[in-house]
Length: 439
Ligand SMILES: Cc1cc2nc3c(=O)[nH]c(=O)nc-3n(C[C@H](O)[C@H](O)[C@H](O)COP(=O)(O)OP(=O)(O)OC[C@H]3O[C@@H](n4cnc5c(N)ncnc54)[C@H](O)[C@@H]3O)c2cc1C
Image (tube, rainbow, N blue to C red; front, side, top):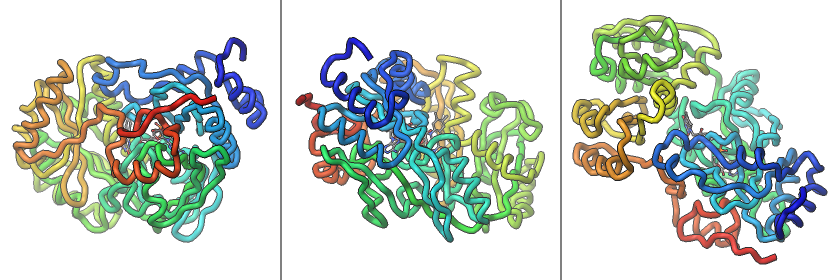
C-alpha cells in the first residue's frame, strides 16, 4: 500500500489492523471491480461511466468488524459505500465520491432459523437463505431475480421479486429486525426492530449500514414451475391478472413476447417464436391455471417440480429478460419500469411509445408491472416517453438515476442523526452534503 495520499493511507493502516492484511486492498483492479455494478443495464448511466473509483476496499467478515471499519472511516472523514454482490441496476453501489467501498460479500452466514423468522449476516446470498428456510419447512417471503445477490443488498437496493404478488415490496413487513451501523466515530451495532427497521430499507445504505437482518418466513408450499406458450403476446397477457389472483397466490407469473422469449436461455418449456408465460404456482392452483391458459388459446408446455425449477424461473423474471435481450443485441436497447392495468388493456399503445417497444410483464396483486424495452436513441427520447405513458395510464419508475427515490424526506431526517457528516454512500441522497475531508 504505497503512494497513498492522506487520509486514505492512515485509514488503510487502521483497517489492516482491524481486518488483517487480506481484509483491505488498494490494488487498482480490486478498486475498479468494487466501483461497478449492474447499471450496465442502463445505456443512460453507461454513457456516464465511470461514475467514481474506490480509493480503498475493505472486506469485513463479522458484524463487529463492520462497526469498527465504519468508525475508522468516519474518524478519517472518508465516505463509505456499502456493497453486497454489486448487482443493483441503478448505480446505487458505485462510490460516486470515491472513498471506501465496504464490500460485505464475505460477511456471510445464517445465524438462526426460527418459527417465522431467519437471521443472517448482511452478505449472505439469498439463495443460501431460501435453502436454509426450506430445510426448516419454511420459505422466504420474497426474493429478487438476482437470487445470488446478498440479503443486505436486496434490502438496501432492491424492492421485490418472486413472492411479491402476495407480499408486495421488501419495505412492507418483510424485515423484522436489523442490526445497523451508523456513521459516527464510535460506531457500534444498533439493533432496530419493527417499524424502526423499515426506514433503512431501500435507502441504499444512506441512513445506516445493515450488518445483520432478521426477515419473516412463512410455511413452505409445494410449488410447481409452469411453462405455457401462446400464438400471440396479447393472448398470453389476457390471463396474467387472473392467474396472479388464483388462490393460493402464485409466487411468480411472468410473460414475454416471442422476441424476448427467444433471447432467454434455451428451454423446452419456452418454444421458439411463441409468446411465453411462466409461473411458480402452488400445486393446488395448477388445474385452475391450466384451464385459464387453455381457454385463452394457449398450451401448457410443462409443469415441473423441485426448487431448482422455481429458482430457474425466478432467474428469468423481472429485469432478466431485458438483460438477455441486451446480450443478444448489445448496445441496442434501454428499458424503464412500468405499472398499471393499461399494460394489458392498452398494450398496443404501450408498445408504440418507443421504437421497438417490447414489454416484459409480471403479475402483482393489484396491477401488473413490467419492464418496457425500446431501441435506445438518447436520454431525451427516453424521457419524452414518460408523459405519453402517463397519458395512457401507465406509471413509470426511472431506472436511470442513482438517487434514493423512496421516502426521501424520512431518510434525510433519519440520516441527520445517523450520518451527520454525510459519509454514507455519498452522492446518493439528494439534499445531503457530500463528504467533507476533515483529517
Ligand atoms: C438482471 C437484473 C435483474 C434484477 N432483478 C431484480 C429483482 O427481481 N428485484 C429487485 O428488487 N432487484 C432486482 N435487481 C437489482 C439487484 O440485483 C437486486 O436488488 C439485488 O438484490 C441487490 O443486491 P446486491 O447484493 O447485488 O446489492 P448491491 O448492488 O451490492 O447494493 C445495492 C445497494 O444497497 C447498498 N448496500 C449493499 N449492501 C448493503 C448493506 N449491507 N447495508 C446497507 N446498504 C447496502 C449499496 O450501497 C447499494 O446502494 C436486478 C438487477 C439486475 C442487473
